[in-house]
Image 1: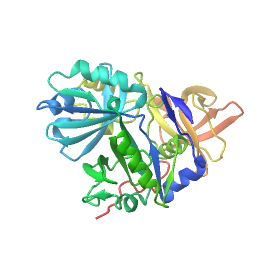
Image 2: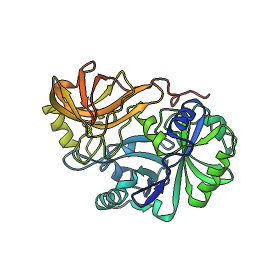
Image 3: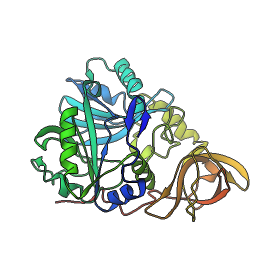
Length: 347
């Protein structure tokens, strides 16, 4: 267990390698109650959110989710979020734990007619059921049609007899669901899921190795207020021609071209790099590592980091300077792991 932002969080139960394998092969459940949940309501809620978030809330259909960002006026990432539309006049925004206060204040400053409620502060919690057997497990506990929920769908359902918001989203690359409810109700669902022999509890250690194998960014590492979606290779989630806070800065960045880019790197050994390690090209420092781990699924070391744009092409040989030795790597496409089930069709 570790302290994080005022929360006590599990790093591992049985062990990171075992929990990682359980997610890739069966199902695991994570306690992610530290993450924030904001509810935004009102006749103009979607319209006002669309002017603040990179997600176009106005075009988001009821029952659908969309990944995107809160940006400052310079295009820097205040947070990466998932926006869910629960009704015509009701939206749910899931944010990172370390930025809950900043995000809430930023939204409060820019929303006018919409009502903004920090549901996390009212005791709501969240758990994530992830893995190729997640549907088989969850279907035993959910009232209503779960099979019809496609990737990035959201619905309000009764699970283990408790009212929940369930989205088919996650952070592992596997078929999975995020389940949000009042704290006591979430605890009931958590216990019900763990009563299934196919489900293993998993901690933040496995969550990090799973997300890195997919090349997913982590706020505070790949994404900060000093980085833009242009640099982070995340413009596929953003329409820069739409007007929202930071859009003008993104258009300028696209026109000028970024001086650095986020790259994925793979070694041929198990030796792990460290965050903030220097990235070298022909002996010269050209960037720094933002995340690194041993990949249990691939059996080698993987990493992500920012390098000068001229060194960002896929297939570029680079070197990471670790505390013990220099680690040869090659830039590669993401995801590192390509057998994830997150988009599996269940119908």
